[in-house]
Amino acid sequence: LMSFAPDSKSAPCIIGHFCATVEIGMIDYLRHYLLPHHTNNFRAKILHFDFQVFLAVLLLCFSTLLRAGHEWNPDILGFATNIQIDQLLELTNKKRSEAGTPPLKLNSALSQAAAGKAADMFGKDYWAHVAPDGTTPWNFITGAGYVYTVAGENLAKNFSDSTGVVEGWMNSPTHRENLLRPQYEDIGFAVVNGRLNGEETTLVVQMFGKPTTSAVVAQSVPQQPVAEVQATVEETQPAVSPTPFASPIALVPVTAPVTATGSSTGITGAVVKTPFIDVGELSRNLYLLLSGLIFVVLVADVIYIRRFNIVRARGKTIAHLLFVGMLVGAAWSVSLGSIL
Image (cartoon, one colour):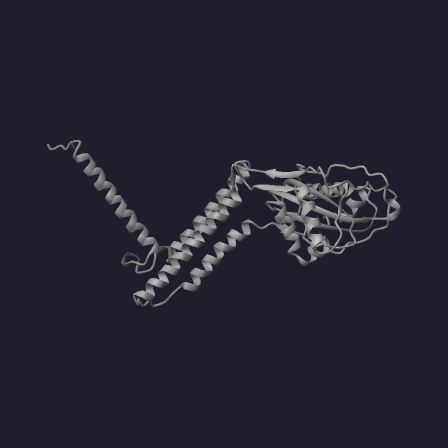
């Protein structure tokens, strides 16, 4: 029977040897996956087709788990949102000023109409300018008591901040034309959070108008714009999105008076969500990290092959670049909202 009990002098040697072995093993492991070597047929393992298939499946599983976690508890795994009505108004008027068009005044009747439109979309589960039952934006505007000669509507969803919303509209020619239309005098907003098509969604409704001369009330009655509304959703069939309502339509004036506009000072109303883990940021950073890593390894692979004149039967550089592009595209899509 033999036993071994290291004394105080031999213990550091054993620990040091173990650490050195682990360090060498880790270096070999990283070299196998990140650098050309005889263990990987002189192509980094991360560039092998089977590994990239494994990576794609892993990302798919990761995305599915994130989505399930978001459905389970959006306060822990959610999408950070900070959209405020005062910022939307300021940014809209800034774009109009840069284009040489007059600023718009916040109108409580148009904000009420915008809130009604958002609640209708959540309630009937559709994402369109015209509801499945034929209700148009103009029905909400006139229903709020705003008598107009010209009116328009822009919609947005799933943006993370106010700047992204306005920039999204400005990047679309039809929405840009609508936002900068010089005929408009008033504007209303609704920023509404709820569930649309089975997913948590933040809707932004922007409504424009110019009142009829006979309907303008001389005395202003400022009201706060509608802010966050939690909608109750009924399961219905979603409607097919039509062409954006960039060209306003005039309706026959009704007799209801217009609620006069209020100023942009002291505006409250926002949807601000700060989850424990921001799913959008986490996904975006992961995709960018992986795409950057694969790109660097690919560059190192090309340099190594040229330096040591290694001949390969075939190369897959284009396929790798496409994979990197797919990851970058996935990261980009995480940060994009939708406009209508």
